[in-house]
Amino acid sequence: NTFKTTIYDVLIDDVGVEKAIIPIHSYIDLLPSNHYMSQFEIDALLSDLIPNDMLINLLQHRMKDFDFSRYDFVFIDVPPTLSLILANALSISNEIIIPVQPEPYAVSSLVQTVNAIKHTMKNLGLAVHINSIVFTNVENVNIHSHYITEIRKWALNEGIKVADEVIYKSKMVPDFISLYNLPVTMGEFNRKSESKYEKTKNNFENVWSEIK
Image (tube, rainbow, N blue to C red; front, side, top):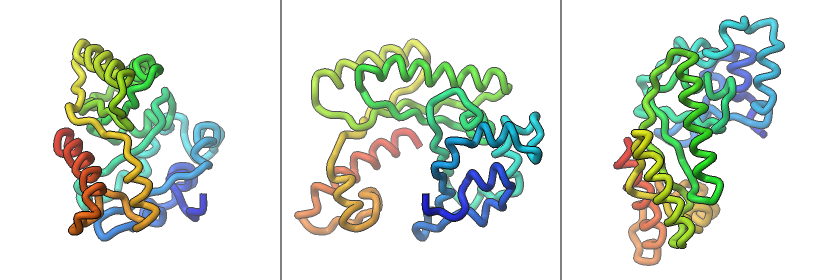
């Protein structure tokens, strides 16, 4: 919430995208969000500056002159609900990755998410490819194995790819961030004592190699 300019300002007030982008590494930029996005839909609907016919592709409109070619990948993180935020994200995307935790509510939640995506695409005339479902925070326990199996069966029937590799729950992720202020995937590990971090990094890299 300390960011001065965010995606909210870009969308609602038409602030230039470049003014909101924050370089966080030599090859990573961030277009941040904060708590103001929770009121985005109401503010957008009530704004005199945003025509109604622009609401569902506002993000696309605001970034029409943005040079995406300077990036290898652009990720947009959105809540998995039927909303203007989802519609705007889909209008500018070409692929979707759905992270899922294999918990008791996961199957119904996943079905609702996929239905929301399909419903939005159908109504907007979009054809965004669902790249894959990726399991996250996985533990070696029976209940996780059960729900992973159930979701794989459901996805097979739906024709949706599920990544073979899963992201395991690991305290190495927050530990590394607290120690070095970097995600573990950006670490360089040369000492034997750092092998625990390297294992976690390799886990993420294996998933990425499979879905990119």
